[in-house]
Length: 263
Image (tube, rainbow, N blue to C red):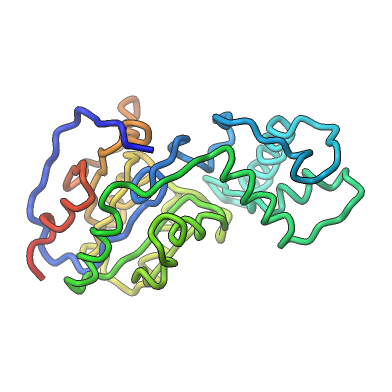
């Protein structure tokens, strides 16, 4: 998988006093054919034969029924006050498979989900992502993550970058599935600042989506960088009035080194 170039012009000012670079994952550190994997509205690009995985026939339409369950859970969470709800995908699949007579543990269902995701949502490292991470760490920059993601997203670090996120140096990681809230809910960004104990203006948040990444990070006082290196995932949201402009725009992740200068 290779990124599709975009025509957006880069903007690379020197950003002073940055102590931490916090990344979005899908469409920023990792390439994704779907762009935003947690969206239930996007049909998967590849066929997945659940009956072959389960070794038994299934009597329901997988994608349709999964969408119904996710929509129902979103409605429940909105009633609880989650403005942009996120599901626990293992719980969704437990409900999906409950009509089948053979009960399965969360661990077994997690393996089924991993097989499904690998089949229908191919991913790859964004070019120079590992090199960028290593260079930032060598400069003493802290690393963080705020991502709309599920449990299986943790696997991508080992698969594509050769080490888990902790081994790569990520110290504060906020994932939507852990809080049942998704970006652009400011809760996730507030949680990052609370856990990292960093002043917002010392954090540079890097993402590919103006609504989900740049606007909420900017609203909390973080510096922002729009990653425009892949047309599959770039989300400019030009029809929305977001009241936020990124501090920087890059097409190559390694340009982050130029933004923060010499540490």
